[in-house]
Amino acid sequence: MAVLTFAVRRRDPVLVGPAGPTPRETKRLSNIDDMEVLRRHMPSVCFYRGGSRVDDDPAAVIRGAFGEALVPYYPLAGRLREVEGRRLVVDCTGEGVLFVEVDADVRLAELEAATGLRPPFPCMDHQATSRAPVASPLLLVQVTRLLCGGFVVAFRINHVMCDAAGVSQFVSAHARGLPAPAMPAAWSPEILEARSQPKARDYDAVPPPPPPPSFSNMVQQTFTFSPADVAALKKRLPPHLRDKAMAFDVLVAAVWRARTAALELPPGKDVGLALMANFRGLSELGIPAGYYGNACIALMAQTTAGALRGGSLGDEVALVREAKAAMTAEHVRPRSALADDYFVSDTRHAFQRADFGWDEPVYAGPVATHPLVRASFLLTVRNADGEEGLAVTMVLPQLVMDRFASQIEMLLTSLVAPAVRGTKARL
Image (cartoon, rainbow, N blue to C red; front, side, top):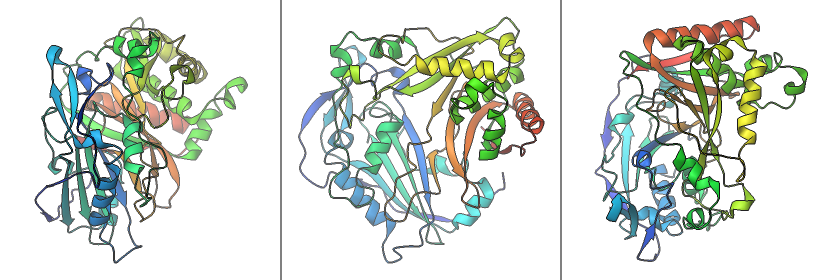
């Protein structure tokens, strides 16, 4: 990654409260929301080219949009409090979210040249933040104006309040200056506890993953795949899968296989794939439209390292599709996480449509690769010509990362597809 330095001028943080009156009350969290592993701030970023509305200040517009959104989403303007049994509740105090304005002496084109607008992004560790999960703002927003008229919206939201879909719903609520959100906000954690359905138990039954291996010399890297790459991979599938398999299925299968080979695990070692899936669409669970709390489960596929390396791409795609098909209230079953499970989170649709009046973002998604060694994000990215592609983040020890990159390179080269591109930075 090219080294890029530039001056920034940061204003003092301010609290932005709801733009209208909101209830003062205490709300419960669901058992899913209250999981220990979610007690952290989740960072995301959106880059905008600007160019239109030259007389409008994006920081002022976005500050106003968040104030309006905090009326229906008023719990996000409150504070967490710990009660008996180390459970958390939300005190809806209306105190507000933390908001910071920044001016940076850099152009979006320079950021693109330095990072390719792929995670990991430099300088994001300087974003105003709070490490305390309790009694601190639940959302921290920073708007950075660039020399070219573009701007960057970075935010960190406490994960106990929302998953990626919930954050996207909130950010988009008044993004275009609409008088009311397109989807009403719904806070109904009791629905996930009042039923004896497997959905809540399943997520809780997959405990926080075991600590990652004690590797040194860790690096982050993002691998991008063009539509031609994905099409070439699909041609390797048997006819009965070629038309049914989605791009997600094919890429996740290929990356799981390459990662397992790069780790050089023993052939008999059990390896699992955990697909983080949104279960809001399961009608039998009765989750209301607009629910923005955490509503994800881990859909599991399992095999051995030897079978994964020795099988065909079609075999792995079949495992991925079988795991996805298991997302029903009746068929998802608890299963403990294995030390070598590989977690994948699909964030392609989380923030892609967050338009504050300057068109959709050039990039929208996580700031960096997942903090767990065994997890990746699947992203939508655009090249310099505006063509959409897919990207997979990865964090591995340097030697393992080199082997992983070689595995992906050999796969695509064998398909006469373009080479994989990557951006990397040391942790």
